[in-house]
Image 1 (spheres, rainbow, N blue to C red):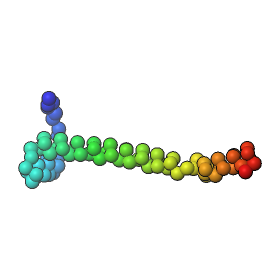
Image 2 (cartoon, rainbow, N blue to C red):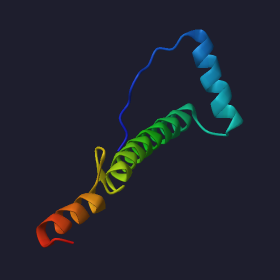
Image 3 (cartoon, one colour):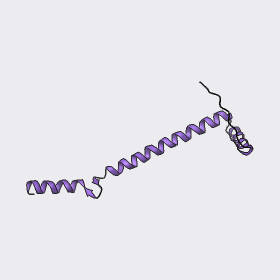
Length: 82
Protein backbone atom coordinates (compact mmCIF):
# COMPACT_ATOMS: atom_id res chain seq x y z
CA UNK A 1 0.00 0.00 0.00
CA UNK A 2 1.31 3.44 -0.82
CA UNK A 3 0.37 6.74 0.75
CA UNK A 4 0.76 10.02 -1.07
CA UNK A 5 2.73 12.71 0.77
CA UNK A 6 3.58 16.19 -0.43
CA UNK A 7 6.86 17.79 0.60
CA UNK A 8 8.21 21.27 -0.01
CA UNK A 9 11.93 21.51 -0.73
CA UNK A 10 14.01 24.55 -1.45
CA UNK A 11 15.24 24.69 -5.05
CA UNK A 12 18.74 23.48 -4.27
CA UNK A 13 17.54 20.46 -2.29
CA UNK A 14 15.00 19.57 -4.98
CA UNK A 15 17.75 19.74 -7.60
CA UNK A 16 20.05 17.54 -5.51
CA UNK A 17 17.28 14.98 -5.00
CA UNK A 18 16.60 14.86 -8.72
CA UNK A 19 20.32 14.47 -9.52
CA UNK A 20 20.91 11.75 -6.92
CA UNK A 21 17.88 9.76 -8.06
CA UNK A 22 18.95 10.02 -11.72
CA UNK A 23 22.51 8.93 -10.92
CA UNK A 24 21.19 5.84 -9.18
CA UNK A 25 18.58 5.18 -11.89
CA UNK A 26 15.72 5.41 -9.40
CA UNK A 27 12.65 7.52 -9.02
CA UNK A 28 12.86 10.25 -6.43
CA UNK A 29 10.35 8.31 -4.34
CA UNK A 30 12.47 5.14 -4.50
CA UNK A 31 15.58 7.12 -3.61
CA UNK A 32 13.93 8.73 -0.56
CA UNK A 33 12.32 5.45 0.58
CA UNK A 34 15.67 3.66 0.49
CA UNK A 35 17.44 6.54 2.20
CA UNK A 36 14.88 6.58 5.03
CA UNK A 37 15.01 2.79 5.46
CA UNK A 38 18.82 2.85 5.50
CA UNK A 39 18.78 5.57 8.14
CA UNK A 40 16.33 3.61 10.30
CA UNK A 41 18.44 0.43 10.00
CA UNK A 42 21.55 2.35 11.04
CA UNK A 43 19.67 3.88 13.98
CA UNK A 44 18.48 0.45 15.15
CA UNK A 45 21.99 -0.95 14.74
CA UNK A 46 23.46 1.88 16.79
CA UNK A 47 20.92 1.23 19.57
CA UNK A 48 21.73 -2.49 19.58
CA UNK A 49 25.46 -1.71 19.75
CA UNK A 50 24.88 0.68 22.66
CA UNK A 51 22.92 -2.02 24.49
CA UNK A 52 25.67 -4.54 23.76
CA UNK A 53 28.30 -2.13 25.09
CA UNK A 54 26.30 -1.69 28.30
CA UNK A 55 25.87 -5.47 28.58
CA UNK A 56 29.54 -6.13 27.85
CA UNK A 57 30.44 -3.93 30.79
CA UNK A 58 28.31 -6.07 33.06
CA UNK A 59 30.09 -9.26 31.98
CA UNK A 60 33.47 -8.26 33.35
CA UNK A 61 32.92 -10.05 36.65
CA UNK A 62 32.90 -6.77 38.48
CA UNK A 63 30.18 -4.80 40.16
CA UNK A 64 31.53 -1.31 40.38
CA UNK A 65 35.05 -1.76 41.78
CA UNK A 66 34.30 -5.16 43.35
CA UNK A 67 35.59 -8.30 41.62
CA UNK A 68 32.91 -10.99 42.03
CA UNK A 69 35.36 -13.91 42.08
CA UNK A 70 37.53 -12.21 44.66
CA UNK A 71 34.52 -11.34 46.82
CA UNK A 72 33.25 -14.94 46.62
CA UNK A 73 36.70 -16.23 47.58
CA UNK A 74 36.79 -13.87 50.56
CA UNK A 75 33.32 -15.01 51.61
CA UNK A 76 34.23 -18.71 51.37
CA UNK A 77 37.51 -18.17 53.20
CA UNK A 78 35.68 -16.38 56.00
CA UNK A 79 32.83 -18.90 56.16
CA UNK A 80 34.90 -22.08 55.92
CA UNK A 81 38.23 -20.84 57.23
CA UNK A 82 40.20 -21.28 54.01
